[in-house]
Image 1 (cartoon, one colour):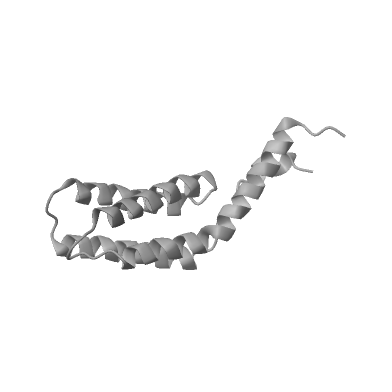
Image 2 (cartoon, rainbow, N blue to C red):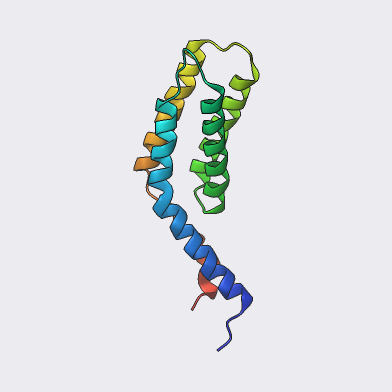
Length: 126
């Protein structure tokens, strides 16, 4: 039996979604650890770049796999981080405020239930 291209696509998409869901706790822990390693009194550019990369990747993947609120939160944190890193001097209080938002984001991400994933679109699957 020959399967249609669309059915194969949805099978691969479902598998990718499951991989994202299963890997999300580790991704959030990694993001939280990167935030914990960030020193607001002496911010290292490479740490800020690591956080920016993690947030950027998470934002895109989360939206792709149906985690809209998680993706929007990651994008907002990424954009604020870009603003902070655009300045030569940023106060420690500003960094602390951003890190607090990051901590809250990670905590909420770890406790929020996974959203249903496009169930109507998968009606093509056998």
